[in-house]
Image (cartoon, helix red, strand yellow):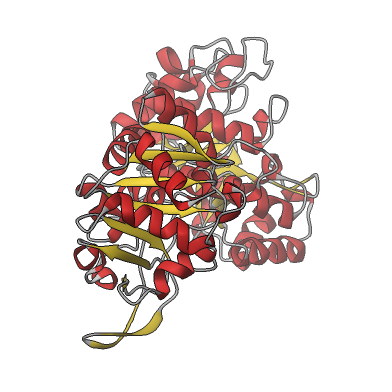
Amino acid sequence: MRKDQIESGLRELGLQAEDVVLLHSSLSSLGEVEGGADALVDAFLNVLESGGTLVVPTFGDLGIVTKVVENRPEAVSSIHPFASVAAIGGRAQEICRDHWKAETAHAEETPYLRIADMGGYVCLLGVDQDRNTTLHAVEAMLKLPYLKTTDERTFSTPEGEVTRSWPHFPGPHRDFIGLDRLLRERGIVKIGRIGSAVVRLMKGREMIDALLEVGGKDSAFALCDNPSCADCRRQRAALRRNRFAGEDFTLAAASSLAGRYVPEIVENCLAAGIDAVELDCLQGHPLQGVEAAQVRAAVEELRAGGCVVTGLRGRVVGDGIESFLQTAVECGIERVVLPLSSEAGTHQELAMEKGISLSFYNTHQSSGKVCERMRKVANAGLTFSGCEFARCGENPFLTSLRNRLKHFVDQLDIEDCTWDGTSTELARGNGEIAELVSILRCSGFRGYMVLGAGNRPVGDLASVADCFAGLLERL
């Protein structure tokens, strides 16, 4: 390849005098080039002429072309420890000015947005969208929850030494390659060939605006759906965690749904975007059958792993309730969930003596009987199980909740089933779970919603959390 051939190829793509272009490149993709990287850089500068500007990213090891531009005496470099660029041409100073002062590394008041606002281009020469740094500007403008804050760096500026960090900074893997088809279908990307290299040329502002629209509707637009990609799984979990955090209620998962052992429970909860656990089982055993010391150790391990324990859940009533409540005290747990029975008053007295708040859950009882028993229990809450009411033949929303139970509810078990008790996916049974969630959200419900053990026949925690997130979006 000769320099004049490269110039012709760039002009055929649409590049012309006085344009501004941010170049990401692979010199070797062109094939053998007479004059090497210098010839490629000169070809761009000849096409752009003195009024145009060539820009390259200079953070990290981005190839020989970047080094050639950066080392030319006329080059202007932006000051930034994480996202710097170098520019040659009429608007180089304007593009690079005060990069380090910008709120983020890639969005407003950075070279990437300035190029776009000048009507400039992004050129990918022999590389794909994975190298397109301007796509990080879209993520930063959307302030996507999976973005991080950089470590602090101390560096020199014209105003002296500065120490600072930048929020909304990109991290690991993205599926930027998967965005190429969308940009092609919208006519934003023009594709040509120079030598052996496939070259993509696109207006920065058109690209940004299109992806802001897409990202505004789907915050996971830049993430891949490969279940084996740990990076994107973690980033999706961050999106879901942020989604759940926007609710008035606290979302928790039953430990029996999350896993058998504490490390598994922690890993699965955090991967699902859930930071809270209701401890009902350990290693496959109901909690009331587990030694107090083992429960204490599990609670400490859950907390150390980043999971809040919202309460201990018992499954049976009888002589062991006092020791179960004492275990909660020793664990620093202030809330216990128990079956609602004729002994509820006694259980409440024991709990009050120990400074424990109780929430009773309904089992095989009509709403009338539940209401009668709850009226006799002072200062206790009701963990409302729509499935249990459905198994009794009641419409959980239309009948049970409306039978004067709503003001008792401090927790909703997120499960669903058919009339005959068969577990189903959420909102696919007779538990009226969508209606129950909706009406509680309408009143600013500040209690707990727990993805319960009843979901185990139909899915693991990840799939149930996905289903629940989808349910919230539909309501």
